[in-house]
Image (tube, rainbow, N blue to C red; front, side):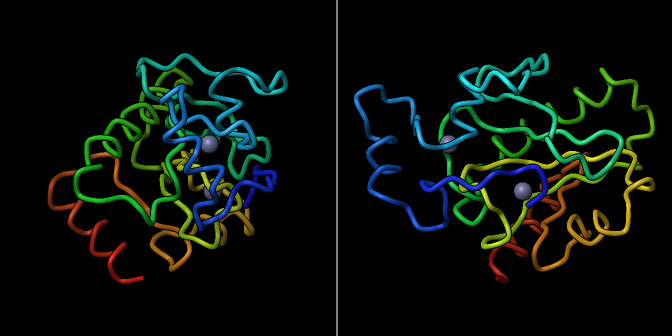
Amino acid sequence: MAGEQSSPASGSTPSPTAEGAVAGPSGEGYDPKCVFCRIARQEEPGTQLLPCESEDLVCFPDIRPGAPHHYLVVPKRHIGNCKILKKEDTSLVEKMITVGKTVLQQKNITNLSDVRMGFHWPPFCSIGHLHLHVLAPASQMGFLSRLIYRRNSYWFITVSIKMSRNKWDIFKCAIELF
Ligand SMILES: [Zn+2]
Ligand SMILES: [Zn+2]
């Protein structure tokens, strides 16, 4: 969706290329055909990475912002869409939320209750590499963005900044629902 170019290698079904990338000799889960993998390696000159304290994650602005601030938090490793997330991935999702929150604070966003964060549910994500959308202020999102990033719709799974175990259960329930 917004800000994502389609790539022939991306999609919800794992391609031989994606599998090869995960088990490849580099062992880093890099798919050269995936735009987010290339951005994570700073191989896309048009996309500037934002300072990010995590070694496993990168953060960069969405090329088609849906709010005054719109960032994507992406694991460096090629991980498929949010449908494949399991309970073991809780810490990864929490790390992604923390990075999103930190980036907003770096941009002087102080009202963290007016923030929208979440994942697009397949097939509504055009890039098959896990990414968390971070939008702020949510109250300044336009009509179309409100629709694309609608809270807990069947196409956008919202996550909470203060994700407790309980909240993760809600998130997990949402995953199992679809
Ligand atoms: Zn990738
Ligand atoms: Zn998306």
